[in-house]
Amino acid sequence: MLRLRCPVCGMLAEETELHAGGEAHIVRATAGDSDAEFEAYMFLRKNVKGVVFERWLHQYGCGKWFHAARNSTSHQIYGTYPAQSAEPPAALLETIAAAVSDSGITESGASAADESTNDS
Image (cartoon, one colour):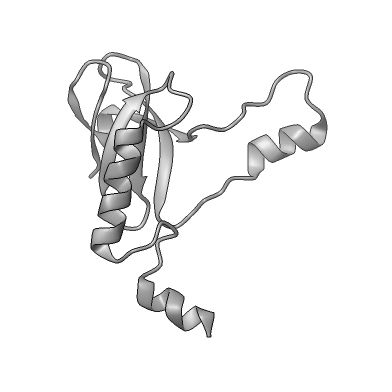
């Protein structure tokens, strides 16, 4: 079970208290967008294997949205930050870079050995 610390109220919440809101830091569709733009917003996601940035709602707590960085393969949580942030905080990106380099896993989720065999 995922446990995320809400950066708004500080509570460590289990995923049953939260509601997943999808990929963070994407441009939301608006009423004036074309059909192609709306289709891209609705259906085209990165869906990467590795580090992902997601939106979460602290539904049964403070009721506020926040962002979380986690590994989609191992479910390791790197940290959370307010939803109003335009991009992940530099300190969080440094934490992720250190964790990725220590584990031998690339940001795409593949091991360094896997990537070297794919290069040949």
